[in-house]
Length: 67
Image (cartoon, rainbow, N blue to C red):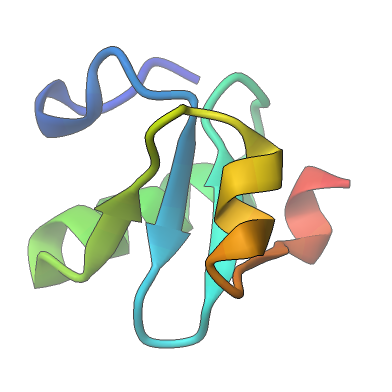
């Protein structure tokens, strides 16, 4: 999936509302819909370093559609 402009340069993006993290390098309609919703709501978090390990350290879990 091609990330939205505000998320360029990031691989993992988290949903602050439900503590799920999405991998932007994966493709699928569920991921695209979720990320589009996150951008509209401005309820996303990015991680530094941009790794799944850092997202998990902050309490986020990988979304089922990204497994």
